Length: 360
Image (tube, rainbow, N blue to C red; front, side, top):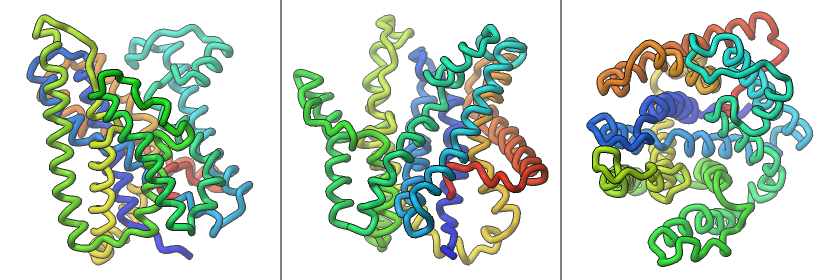
């Protein structure tokens, strides 16, 4: 039996907490220009690793699936673990929007089967679920990617092409006279989340974290964070509401596929992998409490926006609340929900198996 990687469990817990911080600081997109907006840029830059790391963990665990089971089994397991919860929790959000939108802070909807189906297929019920649609798409191409799992050279080639399409070309376009200058050179089937998916597997399978890499990762993480925070502020400060020259918030530098965010996330992933041996010496990481905690990030992801919306109904936006009190409150409530939900599920229907897109 393959030994479970503690560092991936730790990363999944940290990343789901980071997602909460990201969604508790979305006031940044209002481009108000006040102190809350400024600190929200810092938070967005600091925790932007969340989604990229989720993609990387999934790739690290799944691209080599052929050593465990056949493709049919892989696809069935993946669809059950993601598609069913996606439909179920989307239905929950939809029904609450129909029957108690004011209490839960959700947009009011009229009950309709066609409305639910349309919302489900257009991701307009709970828009943060976009990640689930992206990961489902990756599952369908994983059988192809898995053919390169044992070919280090081919994986490197795919990563280089994907990096150029996903991170390098958008950066060049950003500063080019024509912002679509190199768009025709983007490889459509090797851009976006697939880069992070491949990167996670490559690091886990082929990269040994030496002292030099560890120190480099620390330096790179600090530099990338500084660039994202400074450049996001610099790009937006002149056209916020307060500046009197309002324009929509420009999130180019903190976008999950941006070269700086991707590099920052890669550094976080490498540092966590480097800590694996040290974490194995800590008894707490082998205990039941940690195993339970590491089983619920998916449920935290599924429910945390409902918690945020509910709290927003009753508590106004303030710096101390938005960035200090609200995130840990949402994290605790969401983790409690996840633990209760998972415990009930295991007790009632143990034959259904787990439903995590991250750890398996």
